[in-house]
Image (cartoon, helix red, strand yellow):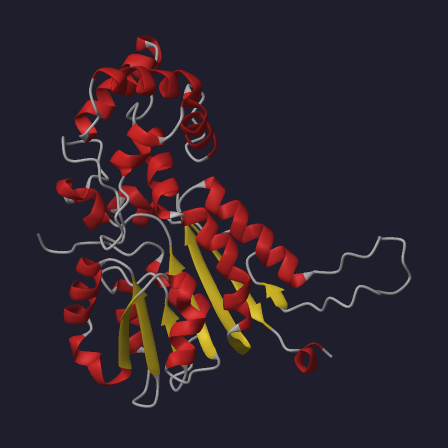
Length: 317
């Protein structure tokens, strides 16, 4: 299957990066190369793009998409949490911009045997990096009822989390839950019929929760975002596109902390904690898709773009 993914907030994110023709840019979630292609179009022969993705299909698709720019691109199969290490290995100590387009790609959703979709029956997989051994099947059949309840409640923000967890544990005692279809049937049985009749797909939130848990999506973002800001040159920018409130909250909070890290009590006349601002938040409110994009790409509906600009101590004086 061809790797298809329509890049969300493409124009807005490219404008926000303020690309310098001779600069070095990192796309930490390369996907099909949509954002990277636009970055490369703005680069001179001296400019450089580093593309990172953990999905082999994405790497292959991006390599083809960016073929005309191969002299200025480096494509790496890795998780963006390893960005600093991968750059260090290539003697790159600082970059002029970073972009992250989080969540699951259209290709991953639409390729049934990847097990992300709740619209077709397929093996319970959901791995973004297929080199990993653990799958969604292991979580569904191996986690305790309390662990399932926690992730469905916290990562899926599902109000029927307790009942869904109970139904999963009950169902797997009779037979291992092996496919998306089997899991959907269990979820449906745990949600009242009148609730299932309205709103979106009844399995959407639970599938999201399991995917986030399996791929460590929130931990990776929480653990690496501040380090990525440290990789930026003065006036370099990081753009992060999120697709649900949990991701967006992490980005908003970390950007805010990096702008104002002081932990001194508010009534202190001077700062004594010694924590210095790393830069400024460019987006006081997140940038969201316009009507045209919402019409053309329904999957852009929940997307939000936040931007942070690095400012050195000298630049702030």
